[in-house]
Image (cartoon, rainbow over all chains, first blue to last red; front, top):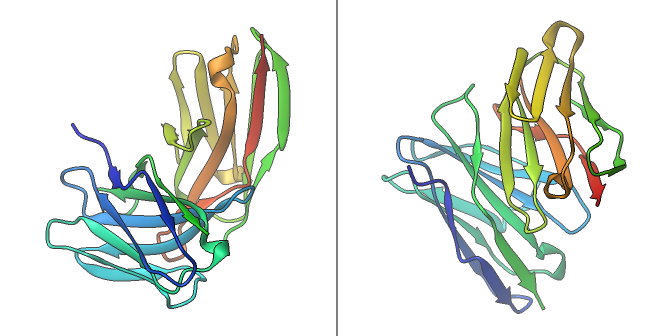
Length: 112
Length: 110
């Protein structure tokens, strides 16, 4: 069984540009979660999608947005990139609420 | 929201030693997981353990939900065990997001 896959592995963008990160959940998982881990900091919850709907978002500005597609894959968009957006972005999926979460390998975003 | 505290923050051990990592949480939970983050950033799921005891090789975990804590035991440590160990929970009262503790950084010296 394939795990959670994220692309790209690394992404370098210039301040002010937009970044798009992608996540494919484990087959059969309907929920996708996005987390940000800035250097030296913990994992901060960004967004939760389930059945194509945004169910919850963390304390991040609106320039962080995303969507979930009919096949349950998900996209995270970060507009108007700032230097402090440089971080490891991790995606997780779960079968439904109350079950274990499985994480992908992450996308390391660097904003210069 | 729910608070998750891990201790100790840092742990340096000789190869072959045993260790116990602790996770305290401030509210009742319906999900608790232990993860190992390797040097490349990948989060490896070690245990899904909202209650009870589980073992997997040299690792075992116990969650006492009524007392709001969980313990991760690592026996006969190997250098590959180095990394950051995170405890993460989902509160019974809300929004289904996984809330992470601040982690324990484990360094195993050969």
